[in-house]
Image (cartoon, rainbow, N blue to C red; front, side, top):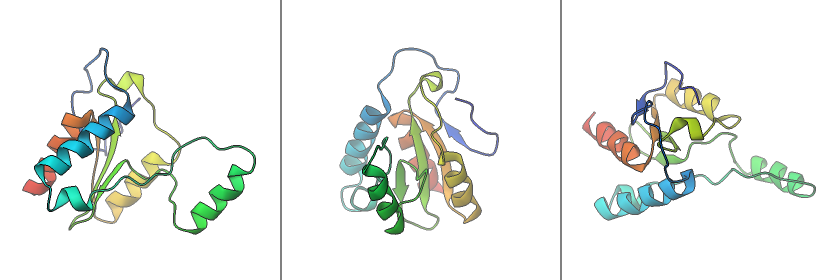
Amino acid sequence: MKIPEWLPCYGDPGWRGPCPKEGAEQLTFFTELRKRYPDTLGVIALHPKNEGKRRGAQFQQLNMDKAKGMADGASDIVIPGCPTFVCELKRRDRTQCKWEPGQLPYLKAAQKCGAFVCVALGWEAAMQAVESWLGE
């Protein structure tokens, strides 16, 4: 997975080795965020559920979901604020993951709207990104 120059990256892009899958990283991140910020960020942080392969009748549901506001490529972590925090969470070893359709355009659009955008390689990198965002 290549990281575009315009996109801030948290974590070590050169790190290689066995690492948890993205879903496990996401679970750990949200657990830790809720533990550290139980009355603020832990309450409002969210993951827009929009991924998954669809077949047959599921395409009709996909069209309905899009009509209701589902956004292609929505990032894994969104925290409302000023600016909003928008982070795509990937595995610690970036060679073990890929960009899904719509993810980079979503991040670019969020950046153009003034959001704090980034990609994080692992949950610890995502937490570092949150701390950087809070420090701005």
